[in-house]
Image: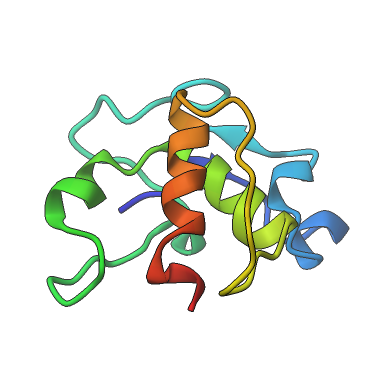
Length: 110
């Protein structure tokens, strides 16, 4: 699985874990050439191996998108939601909010 948000992984923002604030940050298919090719090269940090034992099904992993990455950053990285906490997802119904709801209510936070 490829994280489409590419950072330089060396600036102060990247070292602080704030990759999306990197001045050289770009998204595949928007700021950088996309993935409509037989092969692409991305930094190793942008690749995750999905195994059949993972909590994601193959279909979910294939559909994993920038929307889910945005929701993950909101719920896990920024809000630092922990098991047992109550979460209000404002404006539920769109892709990011539905992903945020699923992440907040999943075992991923355990």
